[in-house]
Length: 153
Image 1 (tube, rainbow, N blue to C red):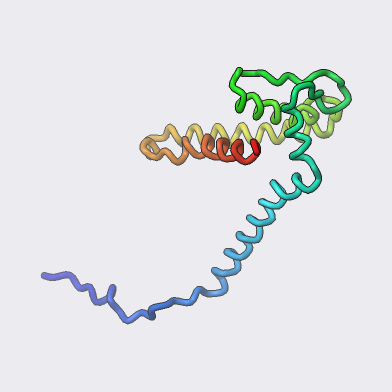
Image 2: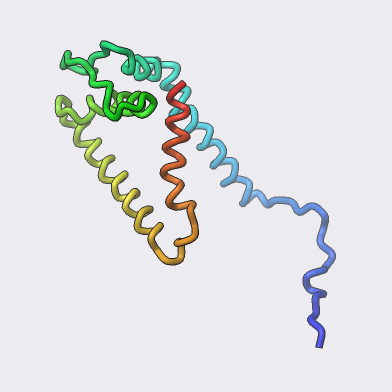
């Protein structure tokens, strides 16, 4: 008994048109991605935030905000890592130092969401079904490295 492949080889057109119900979400996703790129990189570049953050890695920089203390710039002794940690500390310090309670509470919620997502990805990476899939364990590290490479320039 031979299998019947006639259903697989029916006359189908060479090009299949994508219906509008599928095009609309694709267009919306592309537009949201472009908007996300603009808000993450173009807007901070235009208003000078990236320049200010980069200046925090220069010797003699002060902690941003109401305090006038010098910024610690050596954490590990590895210059690229120290530069990134300095930028992260200078960005988040004013949000969590407690001078603005509303901002500190907002970042407490953000920290909880990030911690929950990180925990979920870590637990999912240990699941036996994902044992050989490096995408879950490498995603967070890879995206962090990619982010660091973009902000170091």
